[in-house]
Length: 249
Image (cartoon, rainbow, N blue to C red):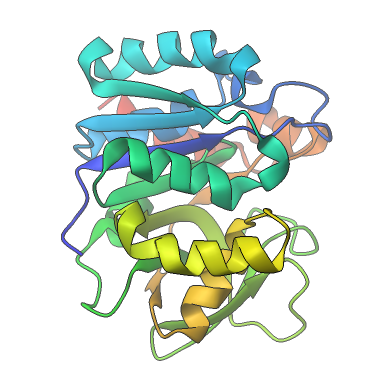
């Protein structure tokens, strides 16, 4: 894949553990989704597909348009959120009809990390996961683990007992057309549900998922009020300071 010029933001989750609409939770006075949108725009993403629930669509559209401009933003409503985040990914990729960077809306990360993932992937790779072998600022019990070897992803799950790195929440994907067979197989197996971790694992089993090394590059995930507190003024605030320094340079 060439370095993507488009981006998908996955923002359809309900954020129950955080106690509200996660993409709009405030961090340093800004909605949480502002951070990935701003970083990807800084890297040159010229088109955004934001996949979300209907109740968040208008506000996320306004947020994204304030960053990238009205002509650059597509808002895709996931009317079947029960089908999980892999289904949201496919909706976003279909709207763009192009390879794209993929970001979770609850992750804050350095532009250096996103640039690492955006680097040209191996020709055989249809999906690329930013992986950190030594994450500093996330709860490993809650983090998504990745088993990889030689740059190839073998499996991805929160429950892996044997793993080699942690998913940073920043990915790169081939166009939806190239992922459709794997997604259809997974949907048939799981009664319509397409979890992103399961899709990446299936692509890994097919020899089509790669790992982008992101070791030592700052990032964090906000999943709970405690995570938000640590990012706001606790031990992880330096990550936010790093990102803001890039965005305000």
